[in-house]
Length: 192
Length: 161
Image 1 (cartoon, rainbow over the protein chains, first blue to last red):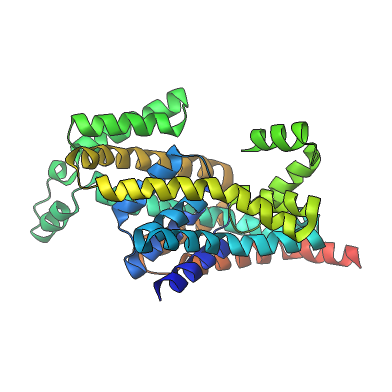
Image 2: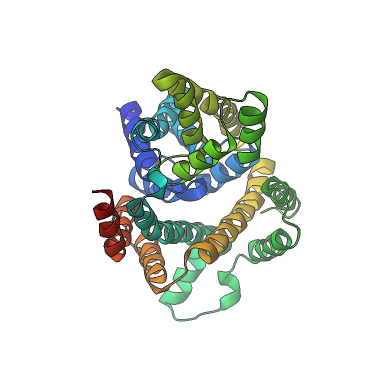
C-alpha cells in the first residue's frame, strides 16, 4: 500500500534527518534509488522549488515527493509522516528536560553527527553534479576504449554556468531565488 | 526564520521571551526533524500543553503543504513543455551551486579536527559509492561522538548524583 509506505518512509526521515536544511537530502536520494519514487533530476527540481517558496525544505520535500508518487493524499501523508517523530520528541523534551541541549551527551552526539551530515550532503551534491555537469555516457565510453578526451566529458555550458553562479554567490550573497531565476533564464536562452 | 519568530511571538503576542526562543532553537537544532517545526511545537506546548503543540505544528506546516501541492500540480502539467525543460535545465545547475556552497560553509564550520575529517570522508564515501542507508551513518557517527567524549560524560553523570 503506497500511502502507508510513504508515511513510514517519511516517518523514518523525520526521525533521522538531524541538522536542518539539506539534512533530508541524503534520505530522499536513497528513496529515489530504493523505490524509484522520483528521479535524480526531480530531486534537483524539488530543491529549486523548495528554495523558491517559503517554508522548511524538509516539509516541502515530503509534500513534493508524496505528490509526485501518489497525488495530493500522498503529499499530505508524507508530510504528516515527516513531522510525527519530531512532534513526539519535542513534546517529551519540553516536558522532561528543558536543559537538554546543554548536556554533555547531547553535545558529544552532535560532535559526531555534524561532520557526518556534512559528508552525506556532499555525497548527494557529488551524485547530482555527476548527472548534470558531466556527460556520464561519454565518460564510460571513453574509459572503456582508453581514449580519454577531457572536453566531451564535461557538459561545458553547465560547468561555465556553475562557475559563474558560485562566483556571484560569494561576491553578492543575494537570496538563493535570485540565482535560481537567473539560471532559469540562462537555461531558456542557451537551451540547457 | 528566527527574526520572524522574535517579531511575532516575542514582541507582538508576548507568548515567549527572547531567552526561551534561543533555548528553543538550540533544542530544535539537536533533535531530529525540521527546526521551524520543532520551534512551533515547543512554543505551542509551553503555552497550551500537548494540544497547543499539535495545533501550532499544523499551523507552521499548512502553508508549505498547500503551496507545494499547488506548485507540484502545475509542475506535472507543464514539465513536458520545451521551455520549462530548458528553464529547469538551467535551474538544476543553480541548485548544484547552492548545494556546493552550503557544503563548503558547513565544512568550514564543522570539520575542525582529524576525527571530524575521518567522519566526513567515511560518510561521503559510503553514501556516494555504496547503497548504505544514511541512517547507519548517522547512528555510527553519534556513537563515535559519545565514545570520544566518554570521560566528560561520565564526570557529568557523577556530578548529578
